[in-house]
Image (cartoon, rainbow, N blue to C red; front, side, top):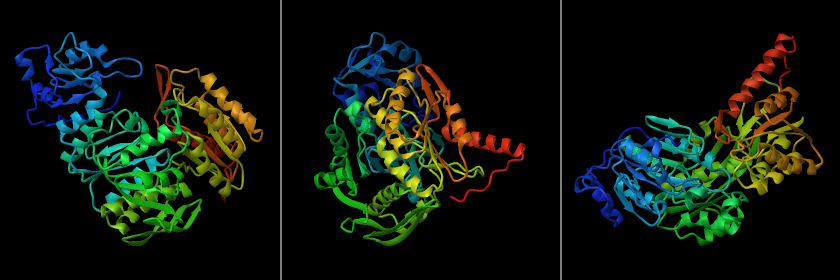
Length: 514
């Protein structure tokens, strides 16, 4: 269940009749008194309803929201919006509830204006890091920022870890309305391809929409790369965004820059033709450094984040802020102060003599960005804890195992979140790809904690250990059963326990020189 902002939204006496008029569809059922009831909030999850709310009942993957009409009535909902009439509550019938919920919420909560300014970022990889870089830059520039990312939703008086990269439309608009009431001046937001296709971000006009890159992923949902690209590209038209910020280091980015209807700003590493470009790029075990050149001037940027891919993400974020008129040097200083991004190449330091990292790395593009970079920094072995998530593109599982085993020395295959699939079947596909690489030592440990503990136990000084695939997700899902499991916390605990055991036996670890 998605968390929602708990404060009641002060709607200006919007009634059920007003909602009906906005949707240009009559209220079916109920009395004149019902039609004059004041609507307090719009919800699309029956479990979050409170007295006076409007319930939007949509078709989901496994059920239709109208199946919970009795719960909605019991909770005090005043009307249901759906594609079929309710037997227990007045109903406004529309052809496709999912199509209208975003625009309806934008009207109801008045979130279609540029207050706060909303900066979106979409792409296969780098969305979370780019959003966090934007957030840090905005804060350093004196803005009061809000953040909506796959790792964290944060604003004045609210902070939580979301269930999905981009919330459902009602939650999204409620959050933006809360941000506006709380004085937030600008918001950095991740925008997933699922959110675009499912109309979750409908009704929002972005100040800027940024594009990081495009690589094979989610093809179980989109079908083809062309469909995947078209979904992303739809957000770069004037009706969706004022500015289009595009990483032209990416092949799809170059195509998008030529096709986008909104005002285009380009960026790229070593790309002198771009509006904003980086040079003098240095990436090592301490982080990354580069010079950025913009129409507003030049700045030197130092990042705690490791890898050239994080330079790309920071460059996209800087371009968004510079295009908006934010002070370049303040934004760069803010990004330099960001010490870690949860689950995104996030280091774990407990005094161990090897490098330990938690990274989302859920597709081969993410693996290609991180593993060769780690190899360049690692005198010893690379150990990867890997797996694949259930309910997602099964065609990439073998490739995940193959690439990991082709670029690591030890691959420990384990469960991520199997969802409703057979965990052993998922592991077998990852294992098949790993064994086909015929390079690394491949170990199967179904229990994720056991896999992490084994990786820590075999790590030697100057090795690099990566726990991959889940990033900052705090929940592991086995069908209806859920487990609290934070990769960063579990890796940290495993290392600390190992160090304490070594000290108890008089075996203090030698410091790392990597």
